[in-house]
Length: 134
Image (tube, rainbow, N blue to C red; front, side, top):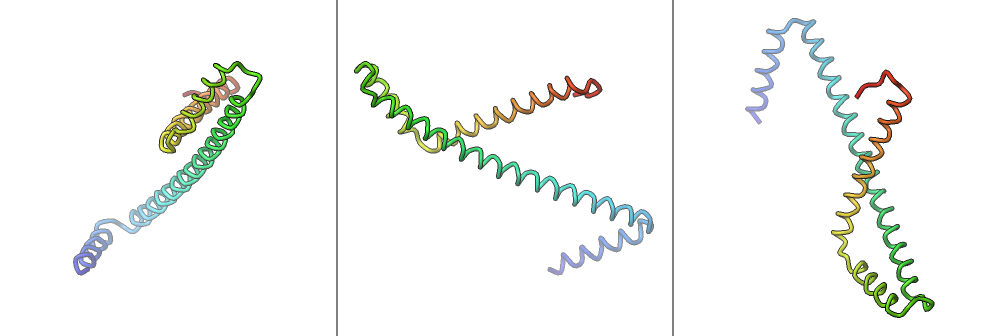
């Protein structure tokens, strides 16, 4: 604790005696601007994390719905028996997929969608604004 107070005193002494008042005030404004930018970046990151979690939940819901439809198709009596057994086996393997693998697949899929959306947006922007440069 003593070293921290000594360091603070030394630092404040250096700031007060080396820098002039204008430089000190300018430095304070720069520090405040940097802090505001860091806080803004933190907020944006939190928003992106929440959005990715929501997208992952949607992915899992869609995954379960698709499995349900496949399971219903496998129990269809109008299909050939050999095709039915293969479809049931396929659905069984998909249903046994661990949650960690589903999360990994969801992450890759969401990242690819985000990249594709960014590319499409930049292409649209370049098309509609010829002054825009990458």
